[in-house]
Image 1: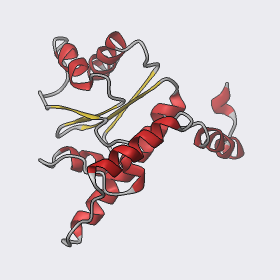
Image 2: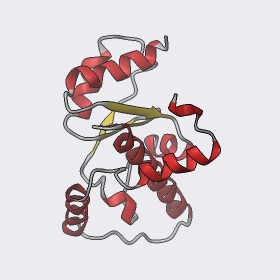
Image 3: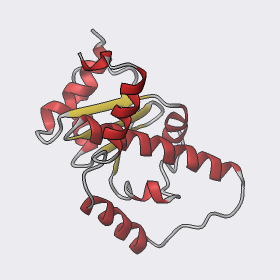
Length: 165
C-alpha cells in the first residue's frame, strides 16, 4: 500500500461525505504553480471555474503522519480543488468524471499560467466581479465531466476495451 496516498485520500474521504472520487497528482505545471508564492492565478477562461474555489495546504514533508489528515481536511474545507504547496494538485468529485475533468482543466490552467508568466509581459485580468460571475456560471452548468467523460471513454474503447472488465 502507498501509505502517503492513504493519508491524503483517507483525510478527504473521512471529512467529506459529498466526495466519491479524489485525484492527486504531480503534473509538471501543477507542481511548478504549487511552488509559486502567488499560487494559482486564473488567467484563462478554463481557469475561471476555480476562482475562489481552490484551497492550499502547506507542505509538511512526506504525508506519512496520520495527524496530517486533520490538517489536510481543514485545508480543503468545502472547496473541490486543493493545491498542495511544493507538492502537487488534488481534485475531488462526486464522480470519477468530475474529479478527472477538474484535474484536466486545473493542469491546463497551470500550464497556461506558466506560459503567460514566461512572456514577461503585463497580464490582463478580468475584474473580480467578472471572475466570480464566470465561476458561478461554471457551477450552474452540468457537473464537470458530463460531456467530456463519455467522449474519453469512446476514445479508449477504440484503443482497447479491456479496461471495462
